[in-house]
Image (cartoon, rainbow, N blue to C red; front, side, top):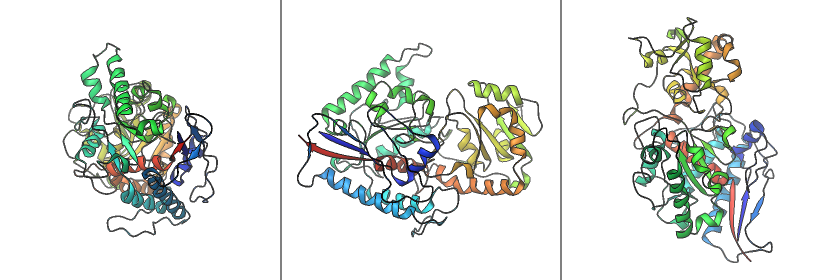
Length: 450
């Protein structure tokens, strides 16, 4: 018998304020009390889920799971205590980096949480499954975020444990991008093979290991940057409703639940390494706003219909003129327009951050990456789709002083989106792991006996 308790941990509390009460099948999250910069130790909402008869009692003795949960309990308390510090700079020592400033919702709480993660977090990667569908992924494409993470976990140099009893979370290492490539016939609309692959895989690990059934998947996670990532999880209801889903396509209208799911960035790596970070100084950026891209969903269609070739300040192209460099346009623009395509995520967000161009997010229902830690309104502009026609007025209303402040913050937040090989502390790999760590902090799992 299992008891799963959902905790309102400090760095997730703001999500309830932003997105309202979020419910999902079987596990119901009610994070009712929100405190922006601190949280009382008593502030937590918990629910329980029992599998089996109603009469239960706790196991006697101290199991490995109980020890793990005790360590997480101490970490929660430490983070809550850190959250009460209202400084805009962390009070913790760190040889590499000390979070500071308004780009963080609470720099001290984030730093304490990050240090606790480095000390405690262990991930078990299921070894079942064959390459290329499992244990592999694309590393030089629009789906590189998916492939790079899988490859780093497979290397086992960071956070991975080979002992599943010591793990706090369990990774299901399938690649949706590879499934689409090898199992889907273009334009066939037949995803039955993908469905069977995921169902069979979850059934396999549930039969061979005790951990899926112990938590009903609540301490398991999958990761996908493909548009179909959310849809493929629906083939297994417990995977969709209970597990941690780390998704680029973080769309609340398609079931993305910020209390248990995590948004991570879509990064289009054309080579094995990044290049060309930075851009023109603010005084040399002559273009107010820039976008170039083809028709890809209704939001881009609205943007192109409204602005394509119609304004010298808001330069919107379906196809760049010959001789015009996309990268130079990013580096020479004050604001970079990042409309959603068919799905909400766009690699243009990270491209803008790399070019130190303020990203303008044009979407509905999109949860930006690492929103539980980063305060996106301090380093981006967010424009609802209904206000596309008013983009120029919105951007022109931003004062020079506010622009310079926001652009400086784009440079500050850049470190959290960098792809490094091997990963470096606080880069995108570690931020993805930290987002998973936060979701694991948000639950407690306890073994019970009848």
